[in-house]
Length: 147
Image 1: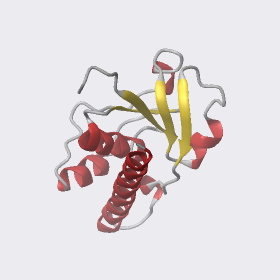
Image 2 (image 1 turned 90 degrees about the vertical axis):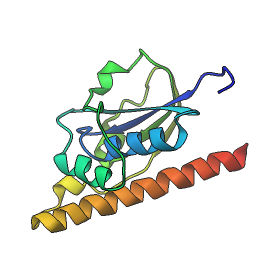
Image 3 (image 1 turned 180 degrees about the horizontal axis):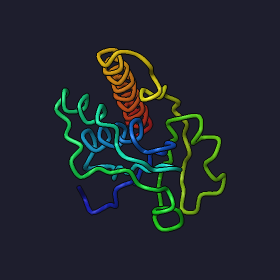
């Protein structure tokens, strides 16, 4: 990197247990030289074990990632982007977020809310994982097109 500061990106969800964690891992994997990826929740809990499992299936280790409260960052860090990944976070996120550049909303289904046999639950996590992966890749391509 040429000495310029990386743009911070915060992925926000309700519990910071699934979608935002996956998004943080993908962005870190693809652009660690360009962005600093963060995730947080309005009501943080524990990362869903199925998230760790489906991310490991594609070679991404979430070691070091944990569920964090958005209050940890509000007014303390400047984010170039705040990306909400669930409707609840979009609705409840403060409209004034100190130190925020651009706000985006990428709604993804909550895989943890899916009811069914374990293999079908895992399949739902994989489906949402792949949607998040595709959305991040598309966003990065859009940003590259603007430069």
